[in-house]
Image (cartoon, rainbow, N blue to C red; front, side, top):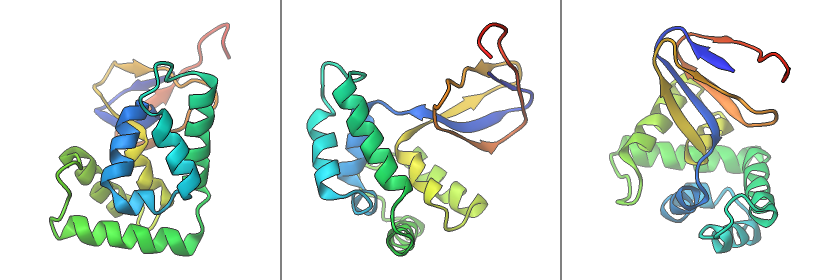
Length: 157
């Protein structure tokens, strides 16, 4: 469990499948990072009635794994294209303004990092002092800003 001791920002857990699909369709630089077969399979399941079913989980895992293990040259090319487009104020209509701001912020903090693309697949959370979030085992997460303390929960850890 992470407990905010100052205003805190982080990426934690996956966005709903439909949100990820929206970004995959609206952000060509993101889509270019995912092999077409994996992207097509994910998009076909994004409106599933069982978003946490085994087939959907496997598709999400494949999408995230392919993104995080993308070839370095492709990553740099697509990330530079994305950043150039956003810095020029050329976000597409379907691209959320808050995600655009987050991408630009992450680039300032972690220039050239593949994790910048996580802005499209992970939830961006904001916590105030005293608020907490549970981080499940194996759940992807990343610190963005603020102060926090990690606490274990008796019986779980």
